Amino acid sequence: GVSMGGMIAQEIALRHPGRVRGLVLACTYGDPGDDIAQIRSGMVTRLGGSTATDGSLAIDAMSIDPMSMFQELMPRVFNPDYLQRELPTLIQIFSGAMQWGISMEAILAQVHATMTHDCSTRLASIASPTMVLSGDSDRLIPPSNSERLAKRIPNAKLVFVKGGSHA
Image 1 (cartoon, rainbow, N blue to C red):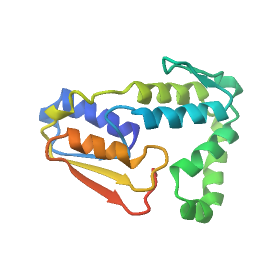
Image 2: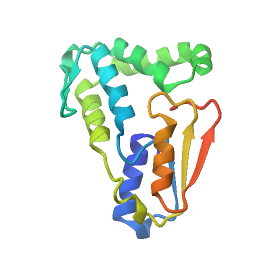
Image 3: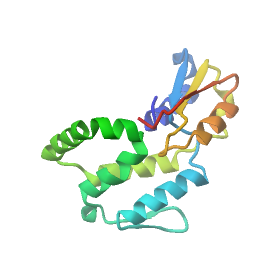
């Protein structure tokens, strides 16, 4: 599982251990630490919203400009070399998605789901062989989260991809 998919994979391994032979958890976390909260808060502010002291978002989904969101996320998701080389393709893909419409409500619901994910106290019960993988240059979910995740899962192997980003 990658990113939110890694959070889902953790829950599957915890709730249905007999159905999981092994896990690869990439660019994900067991709980959103302070670093993730700061990243999210900064992004929300730059998109015209705010974050309350309890962590809830105050942002009008209808007021978010999809292009601003695209510009905010791309440098966090991809490394600079990839962006320079592939930006025209990424813009083409994003433009194609815009034709079908982008649900900001769905995106904000995904943000909420990832920010409330916390299975950190249960991770020690994962018995499946696990590899935790992260780019050492991930700016969306910093590599320190992978270190914490690997420490909490018994016998997990931690692997960093040199120069790797979130995507």
